[in-house]
Image 1 (tube, rainbow, N blue to C red):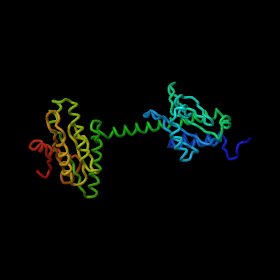
Image 2: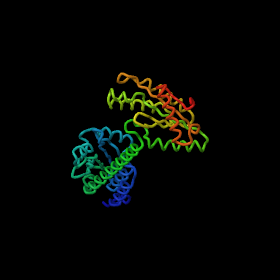
Image 3: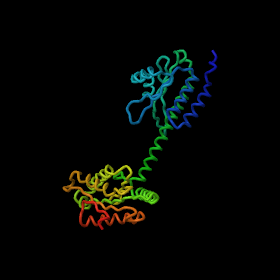
Length: 327
């Protein structure tokens, strides 16, 4: 019997599917188009794809074609059976068949080591139609599906790694706060905006009291714990519009648009005062606050003013917030 006139030729179907899998940005769309075009060429009634997530013990049914909602729900339950051809193919890395359903594993190889990514199952109208299916075409379909999955995962890994390096370039690895490079850029931008709009910017410097003694008594690990604890209070106390960064060994810098720097700084000190006592001593911080443009017309002068306020507080009133208004 000749092919149905509306059935695409196998080569045309694969070409369309390969283009979608290679050029598509989304894995579901790419592999969906590939498998959909292929089963149309085969004259199959439906198809299913399960993928093995490296972080999960069991494969997950991720794609169905030609199944209504009820059949999809039934398929989710069915593939939980260890004897289902889709499950068997993925587990044993070999072709499996049950009646009119043929399943093949999705396998890629790196350095001679094979990795199973999941399995593909194609269901036909009857056993005779399944018997007549071209095994070469089915094998090629499985290989292309595996290639599409592998390509999508590699792209995801590259994107995640790029995002990690980007985050690393802008954050302090110990505390997770912004680093000096980032806060310097933020301060420049906030000062430029405030100058244009005639606004203010508050800058606060926080210093952990007796940090050297904490390190001497408890060691570097104890000091790192204190730094992380104070950083957590800072991150939780500031407003969404504020930016806080690790500024030195035991210092932190806050850039707060507007004139509320002293209020935010006091909120930080109150939070730190509630931290549990470590190494036989309570944890406290001292802060110095300055404002643009009152205390300086550029980043360097505003920071110097905040540093001056901090030094005065450290000399006379540790554990408090000092502003330039006291001079």
